[in-house]
Structure formats: structure tokens, C-alpha cells
Length: 295
View 1: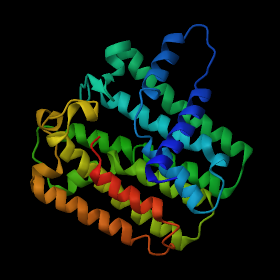
View 2: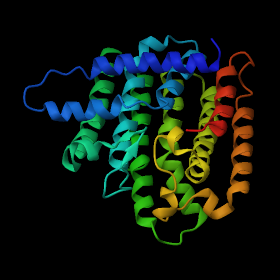
View 3: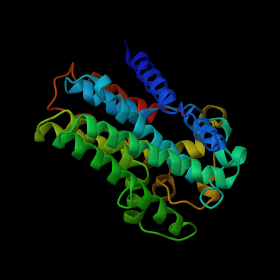
């Protein structure tokens, strides 16, 4: 399979298993489950679980042995999007080309749906570890949990909110982006490497790669919010400027931001030199995809 076919294949596997995990029979909380399913099934790139599965494959393990963890990662990501769109956060009305969760189900149910996905993800990961109890599996889900928590994604979101309308320095902006966006991307790769029993050299190389592509992903997001196509993106553009967000184009300008993204991708690819060329093909092509994407 070529790169695009492989991405689509992995995406379909993740979506199939997530549908099964969300086939929950309930009596009273049907609206909650419907709300959770609405955002999970709304589409998206499934980048984080794909990164997890492809890292497992890179290290010669069977990705189907870890599919639950890939699904849990996507549930964590989806929860963060539901909460990010809330009126108290970014107050967005469109996500992946569809009305956001709180627009459809109301703000209270959207909050609970996000909470439900986050907690379900941890239930899934704990159940996985209870069946496959190894030190590296425990360390892997700990990496994911930390990336989603107060020293990762939540920290980035908190500082992002506090910084709206304020003049902040570049280091603060980098903190926001590396945690809000980069932390879970990095965790998807590093956790997979740890759970695959990779050696320290390979884990370090993949961690460096993950940091660079997480950064490139965020810079590209910032650029797309200025010159992206709303129909392709599936969300409104210009929200960063409207909310007075700290972005790379705001600090460095559009052209320098594009150059910065390209240099970051070059560094990401070079960090994989510990792998044979045939082994790292997917990750090299993924790095290029990240800065060339239109959505």
C-alpha cells in the first residue's frame, strides 16, 4: 500500500474498533452516549492512533495486539475537541464540517460527553493492562495519561485561555503549543515505542521525531487558520485572530512560519537516521504530509 492507502486502512481499523467500544447499552443515559458517538464518528484524520499503530509496526510488533490503546488515544483527542469548542473556550460552531457537539446536544451534555470519553479511554487502558500486565505496558499508558493531563494537554489549554488578549513572549506561546497540541502526538509515538519494548536509542529518536512533527503540525494549523479553505478544513478560518490567539504567524509572519515548518520537518526526518530507509518510509512521508495538508 502507498502512504495514503495505509493512512486510510489504519483509519478504518481504528473507526471500526471505536464503534465497537462505543456500542454501550444503556437505559437512562442514551443522550450522553449519542453525544459521545456524534463527535467520535464525525470523522477526522485519526492522526494520533495511526501514529501509535505505525510505531508498533515499525518496531515489529502486531498492531492488533494494541488496537484498544489506539482507540483510547483518539477518544482522549476527541474529548479535548469537544471541550475546546465550548462557549467558555473557543466558542466554535463548526468542527469537521459539522455543527459542534454543544450546538447539537447543548453545553451541559457536551461537557459530560467529553468527560465520558476521557474516562472511558482510561477504563479501556486499565482493562488492557490488567490483561497484559508488563512494566512497559504500564509505562506506556502512564505516558498517555500524563500527556492528557495537567502537565500536558490541559496545561496548554489553561495557559492558552489565560493568554487570550494578552501580549505574551515566545516561550509562553511555545509552551501552549507543545502541550495543547504536541503532547498527545508525542505520547502516541513514545508510548507505542515503550510498549513495543524498543531500546533507549530508538525511543530517543522517535521522541525527537515526535516533538518536531508535533511542532510542525501546530505551525501548519496556524497557517491554515489564515489561508486555509473553510470547506476543506471543516471549520471556520480566522478564529485565531478573532480570539486574539498567540500563533506563529502572529510572531514571525506567514512566510517565515512556513519556512520554520519546513526546517522543523527536515529535523524530524533526520532524527530517524537510526532506522533503515525502508523501515522509516511511512514516517518520512508522514512528515511531508503534515506541512502539505489542506485540513
